[in-house]
Length: 574
Ligand SMILES: [Zn+2]
Image (cartoon, rainbow, N blue to C red; front, top):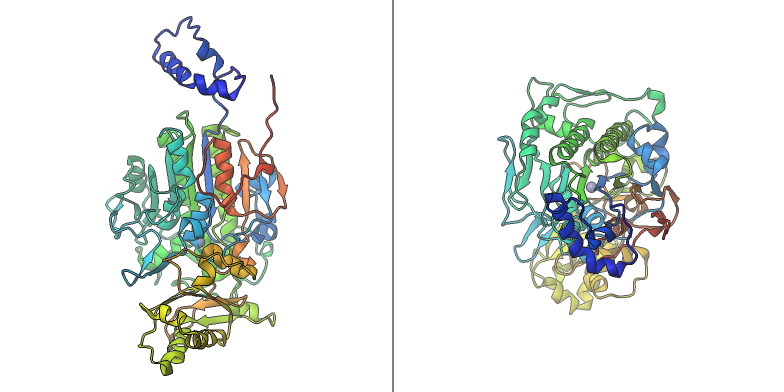
């Protein structure tokens, strides 16, 4: 260090020698008066000591403009000191958690990384599989907790940036990721990782046999059981006048044991010990975000992240905003308050990193995996067409439409979100039978709330996209995993899989190619970043290529690009 290289090509030739020289220096051999010319000429390129990738699950892009006045911590700091891409949006249709995290972590779209949904219909096994379920992995709980199943990133078709960072820097990089959700922690890390940790619904910290356990997580889990927040209260952080909208959101879903603020974390009956309802309350409370923040800080301390000489990787996906958004919607005091609390946590995390790694020595990227729709009944108040589209009812219509044409029931194997999967052989028959296909498509198109239906062969064979929404569905299509048909609802309509005759879904959701689901924030701050507001339309797939550029990593597949406009141009000196 402190010496300058004259040219890149020379650096290539002397790098090996330099490494040897450094090793000798470190071991004390020939350290005194060493005049090795190689050692003198080589300078390691400047790299961040730590890459911090933060995801806020379900943080819609417009929240920044709407609620920034309520923030004083980390989100405010990202606005003040970072690069803010105001017009960042996913260009694809499958705006779901597993898809968004995989896009952020790999720099590619679902048509490339293959994580097309949180769960899809496995045609071979004739059952639904989650994006991270792995029959060869076994989940393991820390601190004597319980868990089940097995999860890994084996279904992800391309490596995550974090994996490439570790691989290309020779393994010195530590990859550490945390989330409430398995699919978030796992996809941020990739196929391997050093401390890939999530929280089981039972409150246990969990990893899987694919990643292995870490002593510092065991220690943290023992010292900080999730049950210790039992009895706490989630109260408003700001005076009531600071919040927009009504204190009670129209169309909100119910949470056992909660009415209006303050929300007690005391389980279903306000009892004396944690029950299942307590763990659900905790997962949609600010305490879950604080918990992840403390866990991340423990990782930095225990592993000495940012101190190894290599670039380490810390990924944290904050999940509670998603649970709050689904339940209370985007026009609620709950969503505003959980962001106020998250902003505080992020402020603490950044201050902690300043102290431990050094301000300017690390780079932070923050984004979201998707946005969220307004609650349909809330939207209806404006007079706009909005509603809930029953998937079981749609399935019944398709079955009935084919009844006179001698198709054996059931013709539909599974309705999964926007995807229709036909029973084995049915779709092939429909493709050869235009009259029957028309009957099916008409049955779908006449269903209230349906905007369009796209056939697999229109999405999978590179057909020139006509509508933006079809282009979005093309980017989400992965052969073999996606459905035979893609049913697009109208804007402000939600898909509802509740069985016929049962209570319709309340609260809201996401997963469409409409802006409220696609528009998310993208922030960068710290090492190598040129602060400012950027108005170019970018996508979260640009995050990994940008981090790769800052760390000298090459990504094989990438649908994103390097956000060069937000990178500092180094002054050239001779
Ligand atoms: Zn999500």
